[in-house]
Image 1 (cartoon, rainbow, N blue to C red):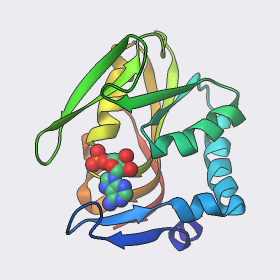
Image 2 (image 1 turned 45 degrees about the horizontal axis):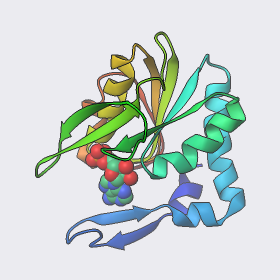
Image 3 (image 1 turned 60 degrees about the vertical axis):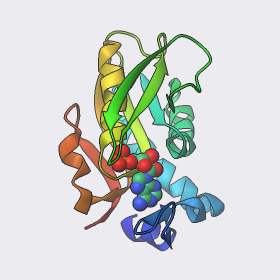
Image 4 (image 1 turned 90 degrees about the vertical axis):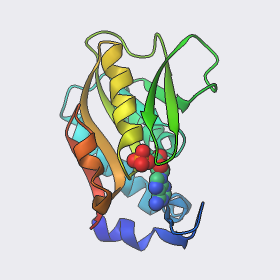
Length: 173
Ligand code: AMP
């Protein structure tokens, strides 16, 4: 699985700014067999566990989180960047390299005691995923695991995610 993912990721140097190598996952989406294999790997992993909802992070987390939720027959919950959600929301802010960002979730999205998986396409510094976990915790939910297709291990994002274990399918050291 790891090699299949790496074979279907395109490195885009200097995007969105100089010095960043962007890991473009669109080749995975373009190949339905690969896309399906990736989703199936997550489905198999969480089918055996009690999971009440999948929480996907804006925006590429939706691409993997929504089919995962459908396959597991559980609700899909979007965590979005500030100001995007239409209903009453709760927010958590976190530090970026320069400044800060806020992620939000609808107040009724996760119920007390819900066991959820938080999913995104890529784990970089871990700030976004940890803020999403914090949102779940504030609603009384428990994060079973944080799941990623890709992990940039050299950024040590795992260490920032204090709420739950991390699972990533392809790791760049
Ligand atoms: P972070 O909070 O630093 O872990 O950033 C994670 C978010 O930024 C994820 O939603 C990723 O999609 C995106 N991201 C950060 N760095 C990259 C990268 N090098 N390539 C692709 N996406 C990235």
